[in-house]
Amino acid sequence: MIRLRCICLFAFFIPAAAGAAAPDGGIVVSATRLERPAAETGSSVTVIDAEVLKQRQYAFVADALRDAAGVAIARNGSAGGFASARLRGATSGQTLVLIDGIVVNDPAAPQGGFNLANLDLVDIERIEILRGPQGILYGADAIGGVVSISTMGPGAPLSAFVEGGSFGTARGGATAAVGDGETFFRATVSGIRTDGISRAGGGAEADGFRSLAASLRGRAKVSGVWSAEATARFSDSRAGIDGFPPPAFTLADTLETEDTQDYSFSGVLRHADGRGYKGLNGALTIAYAAVDRRNEDRGAETFAAEGDRLTADYIANIPLADRFRFIGGAEAETTSVDVSGVDESATAGALFGVVEAEPLDRLVLTAGARRDEFSNFEGATTARVAAAWSGIEGWVLRASWGEGFRAPTLFELNFDQFGIAPNPDLRPERARGIDAGIERRLGGDDPFLTARATFFQTKVRSQIDFDLARNGFFNIDRTRARGVEVEIDWRLAQTLRASAAYTLTDAIDQGAGTELFRTPRHKGTAVLDWTPAPALALSASVIVNGREADFPSANDAFVRLDLRAAWALSERFELYGRVENATDTDYQDVSGFGEPGAAALAGLRVRL
Image 1 (cartoon, rainbow, N blue to C red):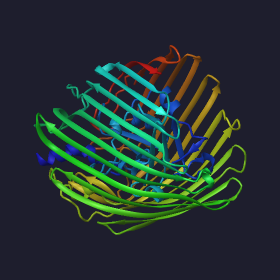
Image 2 (cartoon, one colour; image 1 turned 90 degrees about the horizontal axis):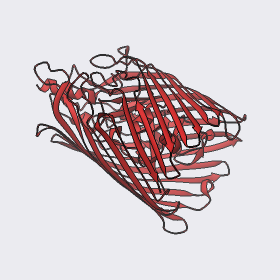
Image 3 (tube, rainbow, N blue to C red; image 1 turned 120 degrees about the horizontal axis):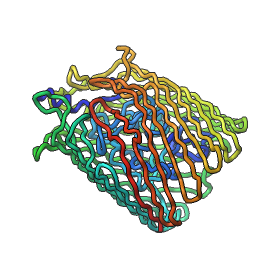
Image 4 (cartoon, one colour; image 1 turned 135 degrees about the vertical axis):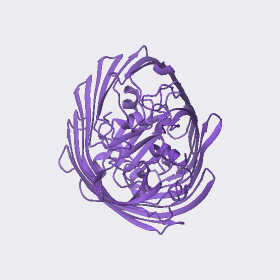
């Protein structure tokens, strides 16, 4: 029975190793942690803004990321199933997730990945996807890249929505805000409940899901050059899950449930001399995040995991000369986990610095280094360089090279339940990645056509994998993921816009010569947005996901169609509806776990 519980956890443990959002032409923050024009950024960044999030009626962050180039979403079944994002073939633990600049990766998850299943978009106004190793500014775990999520600031005093539909689904939320850009306060609450479907593919017993979340964010001007900001987030959820009951010991209907509570708090003190990018700016941040997850089978606890992370960091950007700038800082972190009675903790600290130079007009170069020290591992030094050139009007050339590092999580090192033996001999993951891209814009400052193509390659040494045959976590000698990302955004007319993204990823375990799990070789998305009348907006999107290697069997290729419509009754009221998986496609993100068929939902938005 112990062995079979190990199999049950495999879908959660296993890493990648074993709308079409448009390329952004405006301001990006994640690449250098400063606001910079996209044309001056050497990294590959995709921005999903508030307009896209609203028009495409995404419910959760995972839904929005699924349409982006270079991103693969793996979800263990229907609503509430653990949903992870994998960038360019990286594992979920190699993808760093930030909310308002705060790391929210789960320290109690097997590989430290973040569960996107419970993150509602009700208070989200922007998502930046930064691809490739980004450890210099963001630290360990950013081998695949960074997903940076920004919540709403000041806006309408009150907005709310309510929707419902298939599978007994009801969802709603409200946001209230006061103040302006310098001083404001915002409060948000949201919730969802659904009867769902069986997590086990082909099962008959529906696994429901319910979640309640709340967030607070405020900012105040302390003096002429000082400002302070604070945020707090909380969510509480319960999801039905399936297991591996006797006598077949294969994934099937059970009455198990998973309860999860997430908390995060942060405070930021900023200094700015009032000259924006030309002046000295700095920020001191203290943040705390925690998760408490418990599984039960008819009232008996079968698994428990708690984890928390306390961080403090300071970052400053300092002008050195007219065309030179230094960005540097320091970080300290304490992480602790308690997984089914295994209680461990670790500390880490880092110093980092980046020099940004513009030696020629429209040529921006960046180079940086970082030193990380760990209480339970030897330290690591990583480096990164990048360049962006926009010397010809309408063209941008980009290239970057970077290193990454990820220490084994406390879970990977110490977990000893269900027959899994701890492995104190795990080695840290080390990575090197390159990318090079070209971008073309037609139409001047307000382009009607934007196209981008990027080649990428990431090699990882000692990647950590869960080996089912040996019942534990072990290092893979070498893995390699390389491919091409293509993104197109085309305004065909004032009322008609098309966008598409395609990713070719060749991701392999170089020693075994096998494909990395849950990374489709081919993935494409296409979205058509049409506004036939000022009050009417229509949208359709198609996802084409190629075959994926997985355990115990590969996931077949699939095509999914989603349809959306919205009708503005007035400036304050809007009716909307969508059909998800309109063709009722039978597909799986994770082998053995079912996904919903066709679903129709309708709702009402209010903005006062």
